[in-house]
Amino acid sequence: MMRYVLGLVALVVVSVCAEEEALTTSELIEKANRDVVRSQDEPYIEDDVAYSAEMERNADPCTSYSCMWPKSSDGYVYVPYTLSSVYTSREVSVIERGLESFHYVSCIRFVRRTSQRDYLKIQALNGCYSYIGRRVGGQDLSLQQNGCVYHQTVQHEVLHALGFHHEQKRSDRDNYIRIVLENVISGQEHNFDKVNTLNQGTTYDYGSVMHYSKYAFSKNNLPTLVAIPDSSVQFGSATEMSQKDIIRLNNLYKC
Image (tube, rainbow, N blue to C red; front, side, top):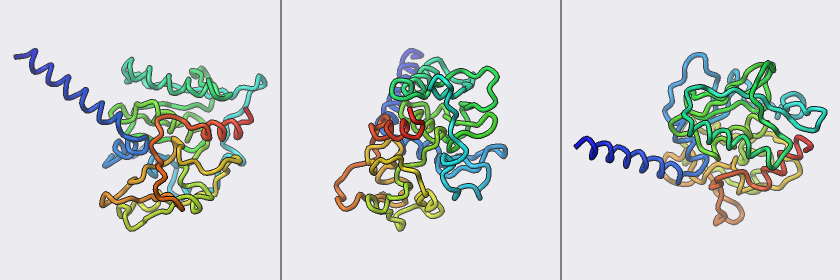
């Protein structure tokens, strides 16, 4: 009987994992962040982007003046990080593989922190989120154990920490995507605000790992985002960084 119960539990766990792995990056993040109750010492969160205070959320892109990670004399950009001890060995493997994926396509190098002042504190806090770009001191990057530890989610949050916004927020988005606010959950409209982004000479990228899915924050199972002029264009289903994500990253950091 005990063997049967354990087998049933294992089957349920595998089924849940398979279901989550079938979700897009933005669906994973939205699911993990849904109904999250944050502690008082956590930052103000808009979707999965962290701010020290709500007034910061409409600021111009900081990468133009202050929040890029510095380049070393050897041409690499070293980003120190710490990793919470609560993660299992499997979760550590997923997170480190996500970090290492940047090493193969850019001059970004993630290194374990020793005594560096500025660094990423990768923790299993409440939901998935990150600040935009480098901040002074240790900055939280949350990958909740239940729902956030996936390769594409690691890449997504790390790209935020390197200075990137969501693709559908970029300054020229109105030429490529239509926001259907009447289908958006009340109180979540700010997640679709446009930002005066620096687009690094690239065109709009429906395939970006930073792009929301078609039904993001939908209150009625109807689309909140529609591609224009061709509404049949698919988007928001990336499972890893696109070629344009990589080009933007390399252009920004002059790799």
